Image (cartoon, rainbow, N blue to C red; front, side, top):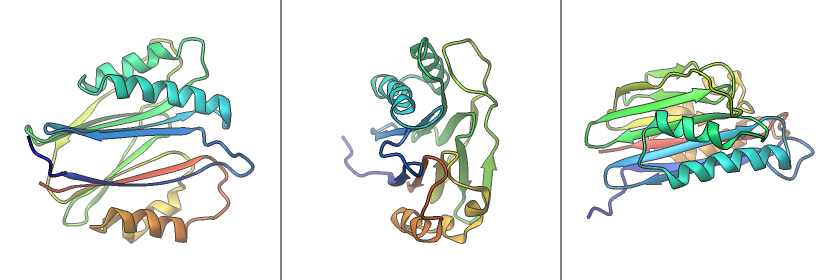
Length: 198
């Protein structure tokens, strides 16, 4: 059984101005076969938003071996009677050398290849709230020395143009983001930087 990690992760998170609780919740884990990361943002902010986003993350934590599509459906079912969430789920399949993700609402996913080409993916519209809804799952080739950036809507468009997202050290990505972004956040903010190396 391998103990060498293929994915390094660093996270920056800060609640909206005036709140002590952040309405964003996240989770990631790595096995010998795959890596899974999820970011959920409860609608609104504060404790009720946190309750919904954490409920979704708990579902994902308990079902990491299912597909991205199945995870989204299970999360949607768990939100019946609760405040809705927007959600991003990313899976890296080490054996197949493929990654897949689904993003709903304003959870963004950006990829950066080793030759520093950035690609920002457009999320599905809407949010999960217990009602059946359509969404797409994107699947693409996984390359070594690839960065993945997942972020909630507290991250502003102007902040995503920074060069440091191409850095090899993911801790430096989140540290530089913290130092260069606005200190007072107008929304709950979570930025997860991940780097895959085979």
